[in-house]
Amino acid sequence: DIQVTQSPSTLSASVGDRVTITCRASQSISSWLAWYQQKPGKAPKFLIYEASILEGGVPSRFSGSGSGTEFTLTISSLQPDDFATYYCQPYNSYPLTFGGGTKVEIK
Amino acid sequence: VQLVESGGGLVQPGASLRLSCVASGFTFNGIWMSWVRQAPGRGLEWVANINPDGSQTYYVDSVRGRFTLSRDNAKNSVYLQMNSLRAEDTAVYYCTKGGDVSSWYWRDWGQGTLVTVSS
Image (cartoon, rainbow over all chains, first blue to last red; front, side):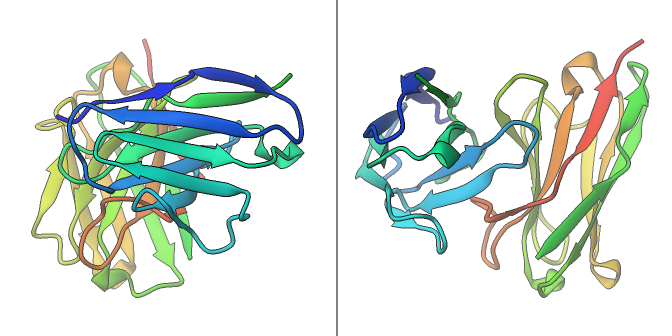
């Protein structure tokens, strides 16, 4: 099974900050990684697939990069709507798994 | 795309429950479907996938043998039959829409239905 480790688990930041979240896979997954945003009491929102392809409608301040075992999600200038929990999800084999999540909090 | 789950509730350990998800807004019979769950205050966990004609299903180890995923394409619906429920199955269960070739990730999610397993 592929394990993914997200870091940090919690991140305190201010509006306008550049924020980077890291996801490390236990083995190479090429670029088969997705990112989601989840707000309390809501279903996750799909952000990025194939590590770096932004889903339509997602603001361009979000970007993804990486391949192999190390990946990043970057928010170039944090906006009030971005305070949420973010999950990475590798998808090259079963069982499908998620990272443990990164909560982005207001500093 | 709309995915509407139902069937959640409070049950005792060892009981059974069947979740339903009615889909609309896309060609249901050509799409993989999935369930993903989230225990209270915890992260996301994939539960099961089913292919478009229902002939292939995949499960996370923790539910294999207890949960059965099925679909009725005439009713645009998927069903998650959950037997021998355990306290650790307590979670919000989300119905999710995959793709036409696989269900590796999910663009569309339902609002979720809460399953609570407790005595």
